[in-house]
Image (cartoon, rainbow, N blue to C red):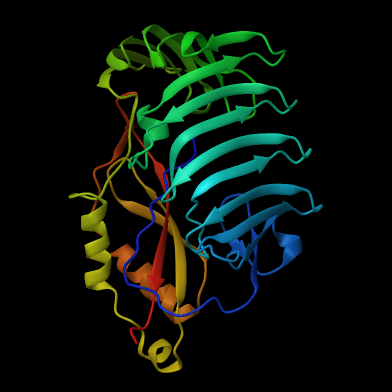
Length: 323
């Protein structure tokens, strides 16, 4: 139940005021923004902060009007959640209650089965700055129950069973001690056609062995998954974009500002492919963001179970005029 990695970069300081009492966005499940409601999978409404607050109110709805999300954000779009964020299944039952700090999970992450029963409770460091904590395992497992409510992990101790995103099958399982993985874990990531066994010592992965459906075997240490990264890290990537993006003259003359959201894939060799505009500002700004990303040097590729893998990214690139 792990999302794709998402990077949020702030290239310039945006100035100005909230232009209207609420902004409405139509969005596909893959994150792409669309212009027509009927083409969307859900709707996001961002409203101005409450009195004495600087946080914008974020609401998301399924097309039938059922609540999908309630949270607060330090930004209008895309959201950078702060504090409690509640998500709901299309049935209306609660899906999760997650706490954020600066857009990153920090504190409790409580997940529920589609039938409304508690599935699991995780705890992230209160000062968490790890964007990939879901992948790196930088969290504690506090509680876990089966769909009937029977306890599997309580107070950080027991035997954890983690399902795939649709709760169709157990994806990973193993013993937990004081919130940390401990002992022998096993799993079957069917989407990746890979089974694995891992040995943990007080939360540290000391050895792992993965076997693909076609018989390839690999061993790995420390982490099951390693995200791809720009050589030098995200700060260096931000500088690369800032140093190479040129504000289009036409947009500058017309005073056009906004945030382009680009999606792309980091290939097994580190090349960036399938660069697309998920959220547009205007064509000249969109094209400039795409042009620079197309000129990015190769990244260090990501790995899963020690094997190189393709990883999807989403990057907001902000264009703002200094005043």
